[in-house]
Length: 331
View 1: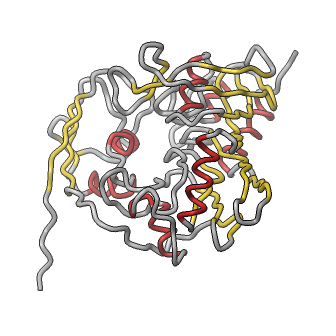
View 2 (view 1 turned 180 degrees about the vertical axis):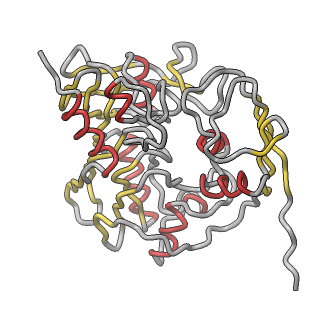
């Protein structure tokens, strides 16, 4: 029996401002989060993506005035399909599991079914997952942004899920993130208390909003200083969407290579050396330099406090090492 072809829809984006180093595949991945970057690159190669009526390569840098049209298949929501995706398991028992999530991996389908998410991987690995938040968010009690790596707690039991969700609500779960930010912070530590809500113009972004924003509190501590950059530990006391990224931008120190909230979406050695970029130069990091480093919570079955942490991934470690080499801090 012949399989029915998927429905196709056309999506159009008018580029009304200039971007620095914004490849079209990365731009589309940020605007079409239900589709993987690899899939979008395939569409570009197949000619399903047009810029002002002409085909381009995935490496094309979008320009102000471009009109981008994309023909994509309509995604239909369905139950989660288990996928044999490798999981970096930090800890596992009969009730919960902690994983080290890689960057560029979506946690769960955002309203539409798509493959390659953490939930798809969990469904393959675990016989049971909590269903408190429904089948499309099976096992998920908290989230990490797509391009944020690090420690993530997932739940197998509904009863345990409810107990730990209450810990999140009461703010007794302690989380620590490591981030490389632009600029040299004035204080060694400080508290940022600025309300956050959806951006008034760009619905993909969050922003500090004193009119309708919800309470958001983050505490940071400087770990290491460099000329023009700082490695910080950030401890969010609330769990607003994009909270750390928005807060660090609000105080003038956005996370390095944060495509939404900083000036560049990648960081190259030539940037750090303040030189012209050489042809073919590869970035040190091409996603936000933000990593969920540590989590602490109370295990309701084992009746004890649990603490876990994961080291910096290779790209952020390489950025820190390069900063030490080429931009050491001088008093």
